[in-house]
Amino acid sequence: MGKRQLLKNTAKEILAKIFVEEKRELVAKSRWTCDSHWMMSMVFNAGWDVANKINLQVAQATARVEMLRLMKVLALDKPKNEKEFMMLMSLAMETFITQDYFDYEFKLLNSGKWVGIIRQCYAYTKVRSINVEKDYECGCFGTRQGWYQAMGLEVKEILNKCLKNGDDYCEIEMGELIFFE
View 1: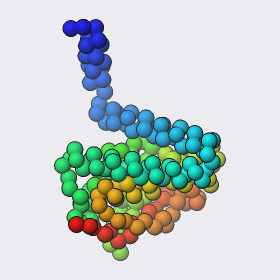
View 2 (view 1 turned 30 degrees about the horizontal axis):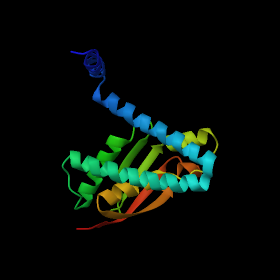
View 3 (view 1 turned 30 degrees about the vertical axis):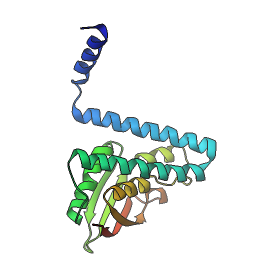
């Protein structure tokens, strides 16, 4: 065995000691770090308006691809009903969103509509820490739109509450889900 292969095998043995959940968090945090630095570079070079617009576009495009990959690896089809839709949303949140960066839950209201509740948000925490929350447009709207596109759905969202507005949490109501065949 050559030195290069020995080095690779040793690295794999060391990495095998890390629990899968820790690896997932490590990769997800690296993604969020890249996203944060990318966003602020855009702000410094092009201003908030351009940075916010491009951030939403990139978030949507990236999320569409990540949801398609998730559906493929789990051998799942596009959802045909609300139960399948909410399962895919939960799977995406558990796969792509770091647990210690976000605190969220989904609730079914008496009206039959779903809401997402976000009590802690990494992006909001970061923009608030540098006093620019008034300038930042939440990229999570692009992320979810990308997920919806990958699922073949049109979902209209209503922002009822927002951390950026001084609320204790964000509440995003998902309007009527339109399932396409």
